Amino acid sequence: MPVSDSGSGMDFASSYRRQSNARSLQAVHLNQQHHRRTASFGLITAIIIAVIAHGSLYPFQFRIPATGDGPISALMRSGMARSGRGDLIANVLLYMPLGCFGVLSLPRCLRVRLLIVAVFGALLSASVELIQYFEAERVTSAADLYANLAGTILGGLGATLLSRPWRVPLTAVFSPKPIPLALIAAWTGYRLYPYVPTIDLHKYWNALKPIVLHPVLSFESLYSHTTIWLTIFALIGTLVGQRGAAMLSVLFCGFVLTARVLIVGTVLSVSEVAGAAAAICLLPLLHRLSSRQKAASLFALLGVTVLIGRLQPFEFAPMPRDFEWMPFLSLMRGSLAVNVMSLFEKSFLYGSLIYLFIEAGGRLPTAALVVSLTLFATSCTQMYLPDRSAEITDAVIALLLAIGFALTRETPRSA
Image (cartoon, rainbow, N blue to C red; front, side, top):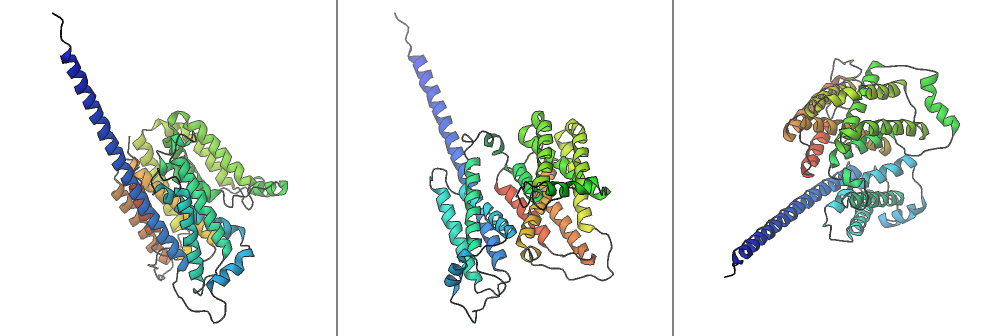
């Protein structure tokens, strides 16, 4: 009699059902993970909106102007006025995070999410400009509205590229690791401001003149530049892996130094060039360390750099000044461009400290506590330092960065 194959058929059906159930569970898990990430990005977007509103409307001293045709007329009259290049760039940069995280907070299946975020950014900026008409220390400007809209669109385009790795090959490498990429971008944004290259041999000579004619090497500055470059090289290694990190690090270093020669208003120092050269020489030694050893060493080195920068010139006054408990007060005064660049620098330094602490084996809450408390302590010490603003801002920046790390669900893990 023929042998029945019903048993093998039942085994095949059972195996197929198990595979289908596994695929279904995996799809459900990925869908839940996507929803959690979307909600996290939505919370980051809400924080960004609150920061923009707070910084744009502070000190909240509203009044009705004695003269004027109203906020709408003032906004329309300013349509042809031009703002300075620094303020223009700063307003673009201010709204780029809104565009980036706004797009990421919307479902990918929504094809018009960039349009939605751009419209929201325009409405937010227009609302702020109209309200500023009633703020004594603010000016209603259509140029700011245009710059804010451009920043929202640019940030949204960047997020769209990073969230779709198959469209741009390099984003497939970078998009799974947003934290080191964001830290490198913050430092690059700080060093290359105002991002305007020029073709002027006289300018090139002025940029190199301090190195050629008046070389002055400061140990503190040399130490700072060397440590920061080593940190940048470690972040690049996290992005691309150790095999290609050395070559890419050298190329990136050469690009930044060359760009600083070409960009308007920038000047190279001996310490900057020497620090880059020293970091390149130390790169092989850095690669011999394990991931935890490397992160712990860089955390200590960079921590000393931050402490030196915050406590210079180490000349303490006998009587303390007042401590400012209002966050971002110093960043809301003075030049907007200078304040944005200062925010970039602090975001890189404090964010790198938190990231390196975690890479060395620590936990994110512990990292946030250690870095923020250290910054708070040095801020209190600045009450005795001349020409320093002793305030809570730096500790708050560190806490916000830690919250951002947690919400991205990409907290680095030690090897």
